[in-house]
Image 1 (cartoon, one colour):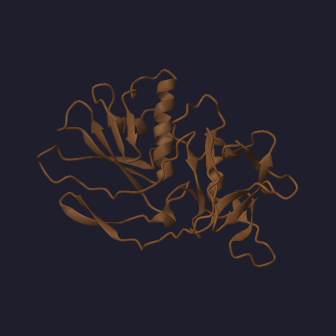
Image 2 (spheres, helix red, strand yellow):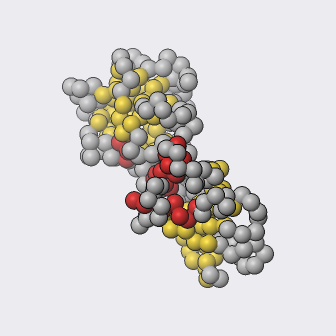
Image 3 (spheres, rainbow, N blue to C red):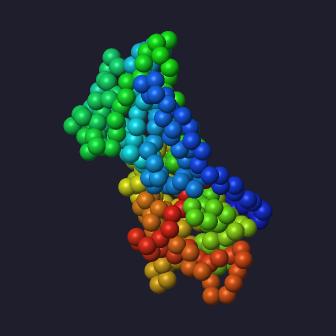
Length: 278
């Protein structure tokens, strides 16, 4: 898949303060904070993540609100469901991911809430996920979840990579130095691909996946310079953990003041800052 570097564009990102959204649960109103762009990270969000699950057989019964400890927990849970089916356990083959916050299932084949107690699926997530059975249609009010405007992390898609703490700062591949820079007026598109070729394009990427990063129409592989730990051009595909975006990369600021070109992206495992895919 090919991508092109984005030419210099003046861009501003408005980060709004969280505003509460109301959720009706057991006829009591609960305020749940809206997540803003500052919390839309490649790894866990700063709060819980919600989704609906609907029985595909009718529009009346077996509707659930799923509460996940984090957004990454949601993706990891779905990966466990998919992998159990691929391994030949078909009980939850009907579970489909319509969007990050909406799933369907067939209760006649397998009750979706049992995925976290079934030893062949996702028992490790039992303490990080729970299912709340919603009222049947036309009975009582439907619990409303906050809409979380995350960019879906899909294998083979293209993304801009943005600092969470400095949302005007993006990764930019500089062709003159073959280095990835932190830049405030330029940005590049990168394609993120799961290194395991057995994962189909379109699969959801989770934190434990090893990924490959390439750029633009030239398809340049991005790797790590062994001497300086900078992100730069690599002769061969170079795999990193997807979770690295939340903890392993920081900006190596230039000694001189550069208002737009802040410095190269440096890999420093466990000592980096948070980056998000947008």
